[in-house]
Image 1: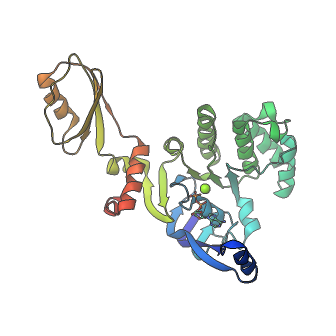
Image 2 (image 1 turned 180 degrees about the horizontal axis):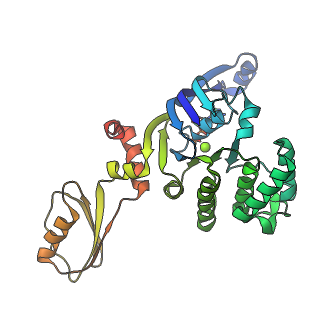
Length: 334
Ligand SMILES: Nc1ncnc2c1ncn2[C@@H]1O[C@H](COP(=O)(O)OP(=O)(O)O)[C@@H](O)[C@H]1O
Ligand SMILES: [Mg+2]
């Protein structure tokens, strides 16, 4: 469905000379510096996959999405969406993909929502019968019916995002690109968008590539993620795998009856407490949870206990950190 091979993108940024004279000189001869936004990345996505595309700010996510949608021309590398080179066949590509940019809308600000949809019908040349059917289906699915006659500028951000999602799906695209679709939304609206993405994928077998800052988006919608940092791909694999490979730290939360006596244990990384509730971080590969519990309970009386899995967000942070000090490269290659 999507094939990306050794894809790179550099931006040429005009270098301004300082001062007034510099500005005048720049009018005649502009010097450029190049900025590599995407640096030789490769990946493939199969039909029906939901892939999270994540990375810190400025990692190159939006640039990649823009190349996939044909808005930007790559500097180097091969790129195919549905067998087509997006920037060379922009129209055919557009007929097959849906795009949502969370930061801006593709809807007409002053028009009632339904009129934006009508316009998109003409733009995408959707046959009337199919348009009606899709509009009905999507209006129900995305719960847009109550504000379909409202101008876009009067919608809440969450409503607008659902409307944008609907707009992107009217022409039955087989691939949906979403660039930060949950940005700025409150928790409830985020949750709704996540659920909708999952049902769109399920109901219509739409392939989804999603960029986001929010790891919970990824955890709840995708089974695979591609991580990029500074234009480089640093991870591509399953969400479960990443937890297993990186998440070697567990936290044992224990309520003690009295202030505990705790001996130093090799596998224990940190201990913190609030009152008699203690959080003990340990490396599960060195010491099993049951062993740790039995060691602790030997000298202390436990009231309650639980074991916390690592948050995916912490794991990702660890991966970024590893990239920075390069010591992580090997771990990343796992
Ligand atoms: N139009 C542009 N001109 C010059 N540099 C750009 C442009 N768009 C993005 N960049 C730079 O390219 C890098 C990647 O940006 P972007 O793809 O937007 O990252 P992300 O979406 O992951 O935050 C950043 O360093 C950004 O400053
Ligand atoms: Mg971006």
